[in-house]
Amino acid sequence: MVIIPTITAVSYLNTIPFVYGIKHADNLRANLLLAPPADCARNYIEGRADIALLPSAVVPQLTQTDIITDYCIGAVGAVRTVTIMSDVPIEKVKRIWLDSHSRTSVQLCGYLAEHKWHIAPEWLHLDDYTRVECHAPEEAFLLIGDKVFNYENRFRYVYDLAVEWRSVTSLPFAFAVWVARKGVSYEVRDALQHALTFGVEHIWEAITESDHMGNDGGITAYEYLTRNIDFILDEEKHRALKKFWDAGLRVVPRSY
Image 1 (tube, rainbow, N blue to C red):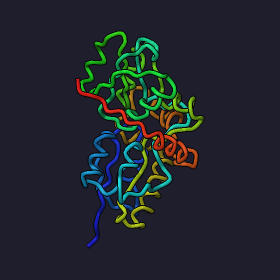
Image 2: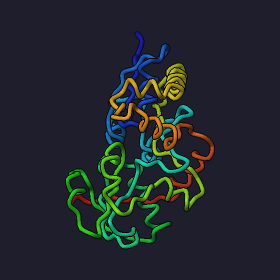
Image 3: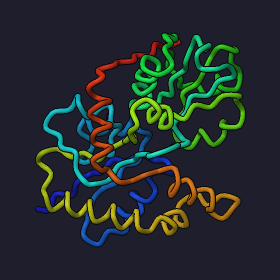
Image 4: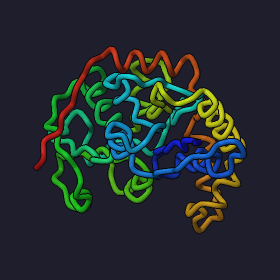
């Protein structure tokens, strides 16, 4: 009997080349489960998926799991869709609301608060996004994913976390990486590698097949995927992940 693996991946614009590749792969049979980053982690940890595009902050906590493929969701410069927004400079922020869809970005905020901004704000869990519309002057918001496009022009200060990280470390960053359980066959892993390659090589086709064409005919989506997102998990990104993991910081936001 052929075992068909389940793959869980992020349901954002930045993953549509991966999703396109998986859907159109000739040699990969898999069930695809799309979810926000934090839910991708839950799907994998709770056994609903065999392969996952996981928030990189989660990976060190996992056992019997390998990082697979040469691909990731990363950035060498501004990533645009992982930001802290506020109406005052970050050094004056007293309270930061942390996007509930994120795990890696939350911990990256903690790293930057200590090593770059030298602040100790109150960390709060954000799942009611109406708070972004009505906020106190000294509050900031970590927002990730497609929702950033709706808010990026509403605040006086926008801090791109990939840019902030690079300013401290001189390294790029990998926000999410592909992992698999140790029992997943090498044939499936190789098939996924080829599927992701196909998707990254057909970004425009992925956009035209998605819900991200927009009023400009997909130009904004294409520029974002080719200028802001870097899909290659190279040696520099591996070094960045090690530095990030070795920091050992742990931000636990409280519910309001």
